[in-house]
Structures are given as C-alpha cells and as structure tokens.
Length: 366
Figure 1 (cartoon, helix red, strand yellow):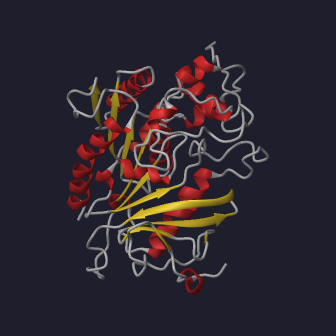
Figure 2: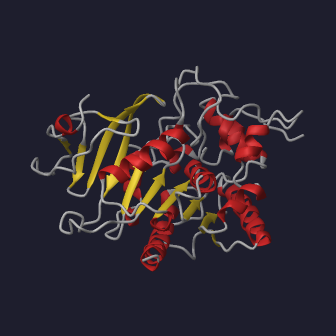
Figure 3: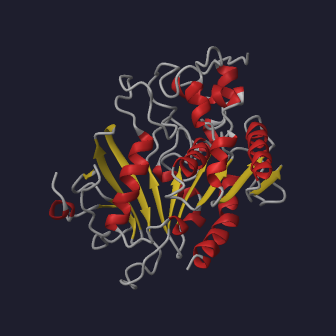
C-alpha cells in the first residue's frame, strides 16, 4: 500500500497541485492603468449557463480583457481572461483557432501574463478560472467550504460553447487546443482525454499527470488541506506577473472532497483510477490528438513531474500514439531563465517553443 504522508514534508513534495445580457454588458468596463477608457472588448451575451456581470469587465489592453461570470456549477464569481490576436477587429470575416490555458494550483487567470507566447496573433487564448485547488474536476463533495465545485462541467459544457457563441472561433477540434501547467497540466491532459471531440491538441507542462504516483496524490491532498509548500512560491505569478507570491489554496476541505479516498484499499480509490491521465485506457482516447509534454528535473517537484511525464510517454509509445516529450533537465537546453525547476522561468520559454508548433498545426488543418 502506498503511503500518503501529509504535513510540511508532504506539501513540499506537491507538484502543482498542484443580470441582463447584451445591453447590460455594454456598460463601461474597468480599465487597467494606462489603458484608454475608449477601448472596449467585444460585447458578450449570457448563455450556456453563464451570466456575465455587467460593468465588471477589466480591460488590460485592446486585445486583453477579463470577464466576470456566475454559474450554478460554482459558488461565487469567476473570471475568464481572453487574449485576442492583434488582427481580430481588422478582419471581421476571419475566424480564429482557440487555445485554452489552464493555470496551476494557487494560481489565477492573470498567471497567463507570465507566459507572453500565449498572446499570439494567430489564435485566441482563453484562460478560465480553475480555482486555487479546483483540480479541473467535478468534486465528489459539494457541501464543503468551497460550495458548489463542478469545475469540469463549467469548463467543458459552459465556457467552451460560450466562447464559440461570442467570438469568431474555428469551432472544431482541429482548431482547438488545451494546455496547462502543474495542476493545469493534469487538467489539460484529462480534458483532452475526456473530450477528444473538443480538443485536437494538448500540452502538459510539469504536470501532475500520473495519479498512480503517491507524490501526485499527496499533492492533491495538500491543496485540499491548504498545506502550502515551497512550490507555491514559484508556480504562480499571482496578481503581479511573475511575482512568485502565493496566498495558498483557500479554505480547508475534507481530504476526500475532490476525488474521494486516495487509498487503494477495496477499490476506495476508484475515482482516482478512473480519471488518471496516465491510465492506458484514457491515453488510448488520444489516438487522433497532437500531444506534447514538457518537464524539467532539477527540483523536488519536477523530479516527480519528470517521472510522470516519462510514464505517460512510454505508455503512449506502447499504444503506438505519437507524442513529443521535451525533458529539459536542468534547463540549460531550454533557456537562460530556466533552472529546470517548477516555475515560469521554465514554463515561459517552454510555451515560446510550443506555440509556434501549435500555430503551424492549426494552419495545416486548413
């Protein structure tokens, strides 16, 4: 039986666990410092279970804005940050591919500012709130301090069609990608497996993508118990891009709240096994998906993401499914900013490597 020891040591090993419609939404949006008040994003209409809060849109630049929405699937208000290509307004007949970026544990939608490559002039990038410890899952327990927590339903059945309804997207799998890091690396691979009809491309960076590993399960438990560790200081850009600040994972919840019991006794961990991205049965669903994995191995977190990524790569090879694994080790082969650890110093250049390849794949799809 595997051992899941929590506390400071367990946390240190965590992976990254990681009312109206159109008229009301035309209210003047909030603008970031230095942004002209006349700049306005496209008008979004409510739909697919989402209500956009009027007057709450934050405009960071003419092609970068954040909506605030509510949904019955989640308690409270939640943000969706949207990055448009520079030519979006100038080409009103053109439709664009879409990439969904899933942030890591303890992170927010603003973490995307730490990865500039994701603001591409060849695609739309959407960054939905994933919660401090949402784990891109519909939680087993809906009566915790977090309240309603159906993150997977929110993202896959609400956000995706909401974006397609409000923006000029190429709404097919060949022109839609899901990418993420750390906790979001789990989310991206899991979502690609759960909905291969939606996503034709997936990338997981330093992801907790093997639920067969005790260290990954411990990472999830640490977030449930709000046990922040050293990783948290470097895996989130927080409210200031790249600041490295982290406020933790929110309120304490039961250690079985998300996926149930993590212990492999009498099949108590059946949910963990069912959603395990590394399970061959789940990997087999990616037979028509472009798959890329990135990891370093030079700190106490990425040594585990390396092991998880190698396992996933080996199993994909056994299944005959093409994939690309970039193991940049201590970071020297990737970029001067990368030390091989669990941080945006590595993830930003990893995205700089990945995005042009993704853009080419979108273009090749026609």
